[in-house]
Image (tube, rainbow, N blue to C red; front, side, top):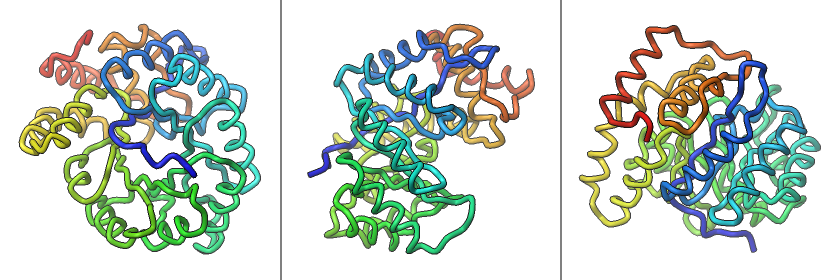
Length: 300
């Protein structure tokens, strides 16, 4: 029986990269300790980690490092998707060997295939491992609510979904209603921008980026305690920064890592994104610094 107990705040780790393009493992280790110290319930290694830009050796190094430092304290979710079933199975088995607690996989998207093929894709992966799997529903690789339900019925390991296709609120609500009785468990993502609203619609957790684990833990705790006003107040206070983080074209990778340096988690010079990734200009970084200072986040 797969672990169906996961809930709460599962930030997606950022990968510290130096100017040469090398991983800075000491900063990765520091990030894991920092997040656990902030009270997170789990950690993710996924798209926001730029995991799709790393080779197999580097992927193994990232996961092995996180598992070692974590030492069983929180759950570790590893992205193991691929554009072929065989590749995804290989990556999934390897993640299980290295100590991941769960997998996260989006449907194939490079060449469109019928939904039935992606349901089979998920089913074959689920049969190859003993870990629970998060279906990742993104705008560019969607797992519609009806398809998610079919996957959940296909295999017991397909028991979580991370809902990220915008607009996420109706998507979350529809998935929750259709999934009743299937055992499918809902999480939110998309930077955590609508975490409270998603909690109200059936989500039991959120997978934001790396920069604000402490804030999202407070939001989750307030909501669990029944204090929705306090949860919303936290979200509103940090809304400008959350909005700043919600940018594409590679911006997010640079911005997340810049903030991790400013918060004292990454060393200066460990804030490079893997190419291709559009880099913000100096004025943009100054605007980010101003937000961090206004929120008293520098060095904390």
